[in-house]
Length: 280
Image (tube, rainbow, N blue to C red; front, side):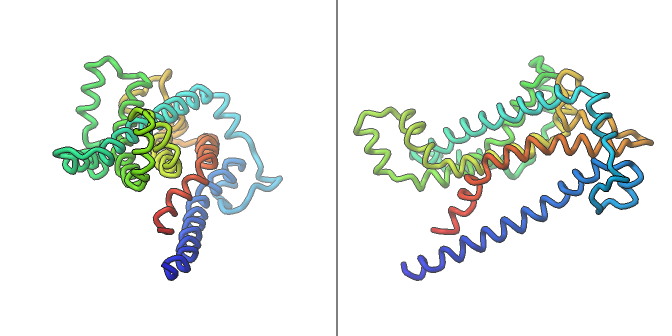
């Protein structure tokens, strides 16, 4: 016990260092995109690693983005799809994880394995069937189609992560709640969920980034002007022969901001969720 207690801070420190290193590596392309979005076209290709100088500073990319495309509407679509999908993934994934970890029944392991298959099999393999189903349901060119697909995409990972955390919740606490007359729903929402907030934040972060950055399903299921997401909307500046790099970099920089805000909101809980296994 004493050895484990002495090594736990070391393990935690190593995990934090690894996270910091990974963050720096991940942030560098973002930094490069942002600084080049404030340059003129010649400076982007002549000195891409250099910060904007008075002689190279230009807002032509942002003027083009805000003037030629309805990016406010694209942002709204992406925001609605991302937030609703995350909430649905957290709710249904947590409920399924609670049922699998709390109740023992015949086929429990097989059911858990079946739900985890979605992690191993990419949902894009079923694009044709998904598109046919959406057409038959009349959901093509609607945000609902994207929300349904992203919810189905995120639930397997949510179940995989949350079920392990739910098994660590004290049985005595849950049994005490049942003795006090709490229903299973009250135990789930009032006792279990508050104790696994770091895991919920971890799932939220790993869910929101692929949704916000996805181009495939918005292009297939919701390509109309009314339902375009910000990632799909930025593609209007990429042509077969000519690409407006100022506008592309400006659009990408604007698209990064909401993700950074959401990441900052969940960052503390995310680190706690990732490092939870390192201090056991």
